[in-house]
Image (cartoon, rainbow, N blue to C red; front, side):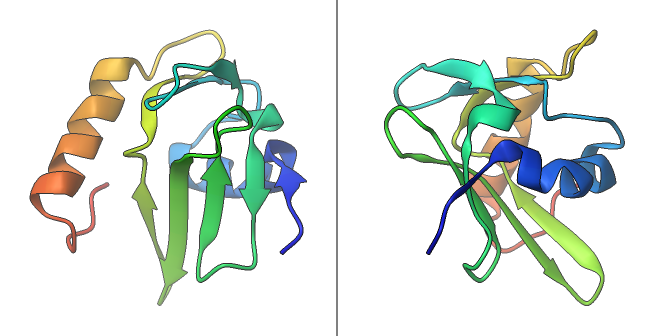
Length: 108
């Protein structure tokens, strides 16, 4: 699979978050590396879209669309902050905790 950068999922991120997120800061929960979403490594040919840390290769985000509904797994993120605002680490940790507690349930 060929990797692209985070700019390739700009439209998907707008659909999911309702805002331009490629300039958002992201922090890897595994290695702590912080960088803009635009600089992350994206694989689009998996069963969904997989976003990995450029530093350690850990999975940060997974997006799967089925029957018009996009499911999002953000468990690999320690934080994600929208430019000029904050979808802070607490919001990401809350979503990740719900995902771990109910792995087959959609969280919006």
